[in-house]
Structure formats: C-alpha cells, structure tokens
Image: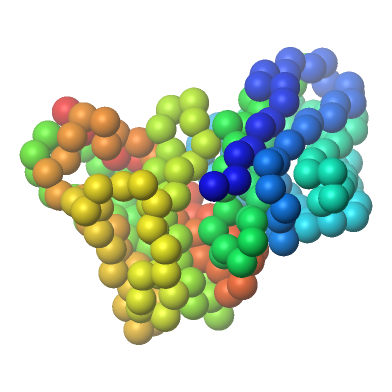
Length: 109
Length: 110
C-alpha cells in the first residue's frame, strides 16, 4: 500500500510564528485530506486537496501530486493550533485514506 | 461539528470480554469507516461499510466485526478483548472521498 511520511514529527513554536508541515507519499493519489486532531482526540477537517492550492484563513495547503507531496502552511500561529496534524492521501481507486504518523505541534503563548 | 456521533465516549472492559461501539453517520452519507488509533500513532483502518456491505478491510483479525444498518449507522464489535485493543476508536462517514470523523470512543482494556 501507499506509504506516507510526515515531517517534522514534532514542532514547538511561539505564538505568532509561521510554519510549514510536509507530507510525502509513495504512490500517485487521487485525493488527499489534511486533519487537525485536537487534544480531546477529535479529527477536524482542514483541507480536501487532491492538487493545487487552497487557503482558509491563516491556513493554506498545496498538493503537487506529480511530485508526490503536500504542504500545510500555518501563519501567525495561535495556542489553539496546538495538536497533531495528519495528512491522509487516497491512492488509485480507493475510498480509504492512509494516515501518516502526524506532526505534533505545540504553540506556546 | 461534523454531524457524526459516537457512543459511548469512554469504556473500560476486562480482557476476554466483548464490546460494541456505535456510530451515527452524517446526514446524506452512505459510507462508514472505522479506525483504531493507538497512543502516538495515526489512525489505522479497520474496515469500511457502503450501503450495508463491507467494502474493504484493513489488517485486523476476524474478532473485529461490524454492521451497517439501513439508516447507515454502524456498529463495531470486538470479541475476546486483549490489552492491546486499548485505543481510541474513530468512525468516519463519507459520501464520496472526503471523510468526516466523529469524536471517538476511548476503550481501555484491563
């Protein structure tokens, strides 16, 4: 199956800093989602982005499917951004996403 | 909020017991997927149901089984619980590719 690598595994920021999270995948994908898992375990949809760039407030994401990677940008980070960020691509004709191990983000005030 | 609900929120069971977890899908969604998330890991796919039929299964033993009902809600059953089954169990509903997750059930096996 598809392999998913996320980097960095851990990230610590001061409030107001910017960051870039990376997701590499081993196979061609037809879709990809980014999620934020809050400290209570809820997975929150951030982006559904098979290709191109999308923006939502302080967050934006870019997927370059031909080069097998996706990036999540967080600008002007806030303490509420803390949690784990997962990317989950879907390969081939599958409707089942494969999750990476995530990037754990801590934002200090 | 996603509109996906799960019950119970927390559960403590003893090794060897059986457990049933429940999930109500978002309105308009006909597909439900179940995941197991151990501490410090990403969610691992257990199985998926589409219109009451199993539509894919991950690398989990047969003691993990499921059902989907005509209203597209779903159950996950785990028999002969083992200590390693302690995890957060997540269900997700979808109508096509994009998945929406419930809040999860945290299962502790002692």
